[in-house]
Length: 455
Image 1 (cartoon, rainbow, N blue to C red):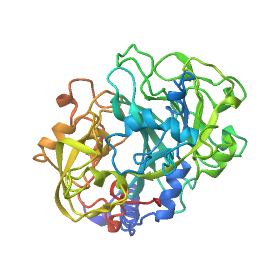
Image 2: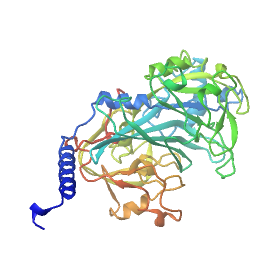
Image 3: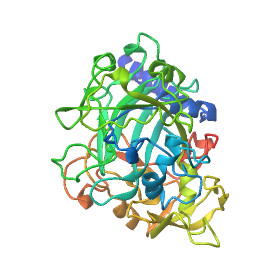
Image 4: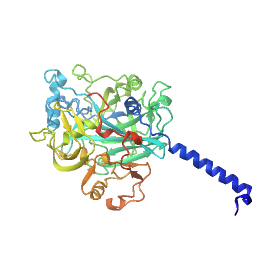
C-alpha cells in the first residue's frame, strides 16, 4: 500500500512504535556505570544478616565459646589445618586470659559483591559466608561454613535504600540451597518497619544451629551450624523468650547468641552488641546447653566484621606457601584460568598470583571439607531449592578448567523440574553471565577476587 493511503490508525501505531524503539535505543545506549567501592561496602552492610545462634556448650569449661563465629586465622599462625584442634584445646586459655594474647577471635562473615548489568538494569548478588573453626558431632571435621546469598535488582548509584528491589535469599544447610523470593512468609527482617525507624538497613533474621550434631538425616533436627530462616517478626521475641519458629521444621528452637554486623551501627546499637576481644571473651561466652530457654534480653550479643572471600581464595593455590607445601589445603585440584591477578595477606605472608592458568587445592588439609574452589555456590552452580549441584556438568563443558569470571546468576525462580543432577543441569532458571560482564566498561564487578575491606 502506498504511504499516502495508509490508514490513520496504522500511521499512529507506526509512529508510537518508532518512538518507543527510539526511546529504548537511547536507554540501551546509556553509558554503563559502576558502583563505587564505598557504595559496594554500603550494600553489604545494609543487607548484612542478623544471626540468632543456638549454643551447645553445656556449662563445660572446655566448650566455652564453642559456638562463636570466628575467622580462618584466629590463632594468627597462618595455618588453617589445625583450626579445629586449637579451637577445642587452646581456646579455654584464651578466654581465661592465661595464654594466646596474640589470638584474634573476631567473628567474621566472608563476603563478595557481584555486580552486573542486564537489559539496562543493575543487579547485585551479595554473598555472606559464616565461618566456624570446626564441625562437631559424629565425624568431627576441621572448618564449618555456611552461606547466605542475596540478589538485588534495580540498584542505583546512590547506594542501598535508593529504590533497589530485593529478589531472593538463599541459605545453605548441608548442601541444601533453600531459596525464598521476596514476599515469602519465611522472610523476616530487622529494619525500620520493625523497629519504629531505629534501624535503617534491612537485615535478614537467620537462625543457626549449634556447632555439634548427631547426623545429616533429613529427619534430624537442625544441627552442625546449619542455617534456617526465622519465621517470626523480631517484635514477637525481642521482649519475650529467645525462641523462634525455624523454617523446614514446624518447631521452635532456642537461641543464646545474637551476631550482628559491627559496621551496621544502628543494628549494633539496637542489640547493644559488643566486640569480642581477649578482655571481653569471658563475658561473651554463653556456656548454655542447647535445650536451655532464656529470655531474649539475657542472650549474648556480639559484633561480627565483614572480610573478603578474595582474601581466602588465594590461600588454596598450590604455590601459596612456596617453596613449602600448602599448610591449609590439599587433595583435589581445581584449574582456574586467571585473567586478573589476585593477592592475599591473610596468612601473614603475602600471596600474589599473576594472570595465567593456576592450580588450586580444593580440600581442607586435616579434614574432608571442600574449600572455596569446589564450593557450588562460588560459581553459581547450585540447584535452586534442592540439595546438590551441577558443578561437574558445567566443568565438562569447560574441559575441566574454570574461567576466573565464570558465574551462573540465578534469577530467583525454582528450576524447571526435579530429577537427577544431569537432567537438572542447564534447566536452572538464570543464565551464565556473558564474557566481559565483570569489566567496568560493561557495568560489572566481580568481588569474588577483590579486597573491599581493610584486613
